[in-house]
Image (cartoon, rainbow, N blue to C red):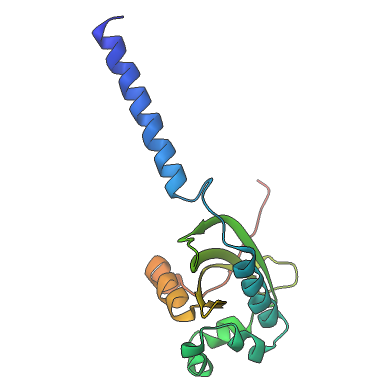
Amino acid sequence: MSTLTSRKLWRIAAVFSLMAVLLISAGCGGKKASAEANALLSKALQSLADKDFMTFQACVTPSQQANLPNLPEGPFFAAASGYGIDNEFDTNVTATTASVMADLYFSPDKKEFSTINWALRQEGGKWYIDLDETIRGEKARNGANAFQSWIIKVQKR
C-alpha cells in the first residue's frame, strides 16, 4: 500500500473516531434518566397542565419552593396545557442528577410549544426539579428566546 493511501485511511479512521466520540457525548447511546427521575418530571409537568400549582411547587427542590410564586417565568409555566418528555437527549445523568428535555405545549393541538432542558436532582433520596438551574441553563442557551413558545407552520409550496 502506498504512503498516500495509508494516510488517507488513517485520516478517515480518525474522522470516524471523532464522530463517534461526538455522538456519544451529545447523548446518542448515552445513559437515560432513571425511572424515578422521569416519574417526578412527569408528575410536575402534568400538574402544570392541570393548573395544580401546589403539586408543581412540591416537585421543586425544597430550598426553591418559597421563591416559586415570585418567579418572573411563572406566567410562562402557568400557561402550559400539556407536555411531552424526550429521553433521547438526557445529559448529566448520574445517580443523583439528570437533565431531561421536555416540550411544554400551550395549545390543545400541540402546535404551540417550547422545549425546556429540565435539571433534576436527588436530595434526601427523593427527586426534584432544580428550577433555578433549569432557568439559568435555558437563559444561557437561548438568551432572549428563553421561555417563549413557538408555533410551527408547515406550508405547501
